[in-house]
Image 1 (spheres, one colour):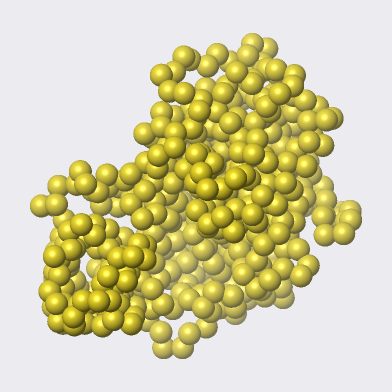
Image 2 (tube, helix red, strand yellow):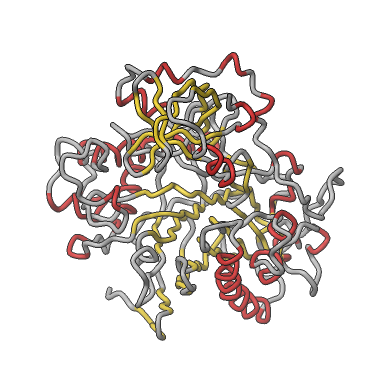
Length: 507
């Protein structure tokens, strides 16, 4: 059977229940899980990439390659196996899959690909059996093979299209989706300066469900970037208006990395208008469910009390860049319904959460590579409706978003349990990689003004703070000054660095 595409401009439809080529496992009979997961630069290994650290870098010990991809895949699998007693999510919205830049080794038929390599494993393919053909295959093929080998079967793969004329970084990464349900239709909606929004129409036991995968423009607190996100939101809102005009009770799930806080307008009051709340219409009152008009989207962060709403961390504050929203038809007793109270993060200490604060264990290319992602996945449970609308329990928290950012709690950490940075003096590359993102007590000597650098036991580290005023003050200090501070170990442009986490503790 020939593949059929119907295209109009840069928006392409495809009828892909058979196109993506995965064997369809029988979907759950009662409930299923949808997850949104930013896998932080999941790249292939052809070394053709817009990001320098993933391109060909001769003799660089921190260069990305097969063993690092293998490590990332193993970690993703372990994270997903924490869902549904090891079965994994049934629909997975993915962010930061690399756009394939070697089309000569594309994998147009994923089922044929899995059959071809059924007698081996992804680990062998990335180590002892690696050849030029395998080096060029897209990362979604590697991911599917890893899941298949690890017992997470039955997925088909969808990826967003890159719009013609996309800039270098706009074509670096894309939105993807894995689903165990038959795919009826798929298309990509181009957005300005961001990844295209991936739309998939799924057949959930005879009920159509629309799933939208998003990855909006970055820079949550930047008003200039919010202007771009207003446009990203408008693209999605206009499509939703079409959907709800045809069926006001349509079952819709919207997810991904919006680079936006669920309380964007409250948290950044200097922004007169926000994409998520003002344009898209995200809100937190479950009273919308079952209604025929009025607000039509419910943000699932409101299923949790305010102190438990987080998916990422920046400068000592929790963020909610990962989002899941549903339409008002998702609790009307018809088709598919949300299971109330089911939103959660997948946060596993020692796997994708690190240290006493259990912050996201970011991926690093340092040495052998280590970590998971700078975002926790978020997920929710859904069920086939039984004719009765689900009941939402009474809650002690308000549907009005709070203004304050949620602090990660650095001030509450027992500092006697933090390691001193002197432990890094003779550490191996693997030990340093595993320590990325860890907060240390740093006893240092100020050694350089531009760029800021310190020495710890004779080892040089870059010094950074998100507080520009603090950086300006540090540049006034004399070289050779001793200082003590709390610093998060990281890597910037190939150099080890400490990001100051507690400026009040600088002595």
